[in-house]
Length: 232
Image 1 (tube, rainbow, N blue to C red):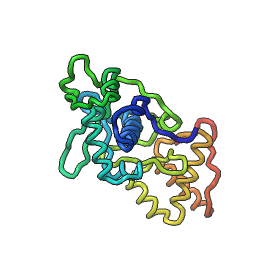
Image 2 (image 1 turned 180 degrees about the vertical axis):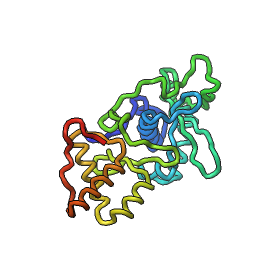
Image 3 (image 1 turned 30 degrees about the vertical axis):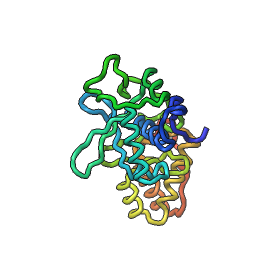
Image 4 (image 1 turned 120 degrees about the horizontal axis):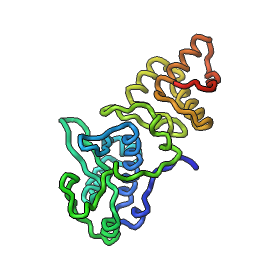
């Protein structure tokens, strides 16, 4: 299977715009990355930090379309946004509806839900941490993805979208290896996809490979297959 996003079945018939459904799928996928990296508030609820511009780039839509989609998702009770300091992106909490809420979404009876701090009787929405999420070939090894820190969101890169680098890490690679940085990303993406190997830091791996090539006086990329037990 090629890389794919989790798209819950209830979205198919939900009274939501197509772009809104796509944004929810992207947020749900990103939430799994946050879950693996331990991004949780004081109540233990998983959150994501995903600026509107980055969401727009991810789905190839305008920032205004994303803003409208987020507003629609919040009205439908599928996400909750909490503001932070000035110029800082909101924290987004992705919610998974229960059976009753799914019926409401399909019946075009959208209504604002109360927050998780004051759940209604029966608790209509359930925090992400309380539901086991299905995985795919992109998220099955989330526990071994690079360390992602708040305020420095890593983006999936490479042909197979399995190399995670922050903007700062990309800038450093461009500065240190201006002629070949993109090639190293693509080679790392292909290598991990074909072998199933994982690395704790993709930036450190690329930097190590590039430095080894420099020492050996090579212009290309060497064979980086590891012996049993070797890993970064």
